[in-house]
Image 1 (cartoon, rainbow, N blue to C red):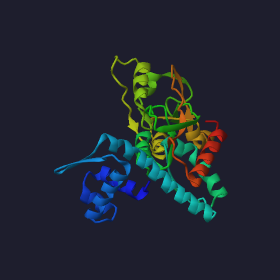
Image 2 (image 1 turned 135 degrees about the horizontal axis):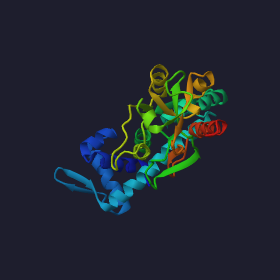
Image 3 (image 1 turned 90 degrees about the vertical axis):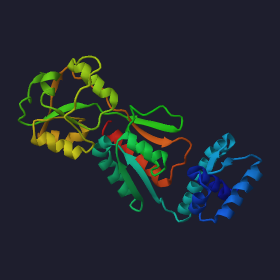
Image 4 (image 1 turned 180 degrees about the vertical axis):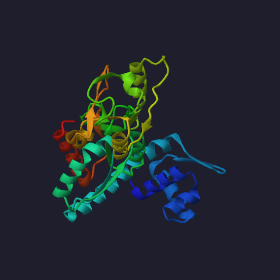
Length: 301
């Protein structure tokens, strides 16, 4: 099977336009049309319907193109890995990380990775799980590590669970609430600063606050940057929702203290490594995943 012609079929499926597809693969339009005709002849099936001003895959075409994408991706991975193996290098990897792990796992994981593999080239994308999943699907990253509690059930995803972190509430030293137990309603009056919540969390909080059914709790500040969240908590009376691992230094120095709140219950995060099922990870991605898993174990997530 001719991979080059398969790539032409994928380009046409992506653009649904012969001229644009031909330009994308650097062919003249006549040569591109001959390539599509040739692969249809080789396979003995029609891949595209060609009406005036309209190009669309046939049902057979959709089947072939889905498989072709996987073949082409694996072919690129094989060529990359052969080149790296020949040159005795790990190469590079692009991956994503959720905000909680950026503040907890990644400093430890990246230090270990850089010490063990100083020649590796990495690109780390930080975002919430929705953003990272989109980047994974379009293959701009090889994997991501994040809280996977709200991850959609999808047979195309491979999720490796590596632990979880329980959430608590924190305030600055000297805060009016510090040093004694409070109700959640008392705490809520000061406003809560948290990373972007998953949708079930606001419903759970509303139930804990005794709000009417169907009403969600209002968050004072949602932000995926833990540095900003900690600054707000350290300089105002705002309550910080985080984990011990995310505020370890501030807890040890006494700058932040954990609140004791009646009825506070928050399910721990569920940390996972998310990849596209059936895709071979690059050597650098395998090394990065191993470093993240080790870091997770070291901080008892």
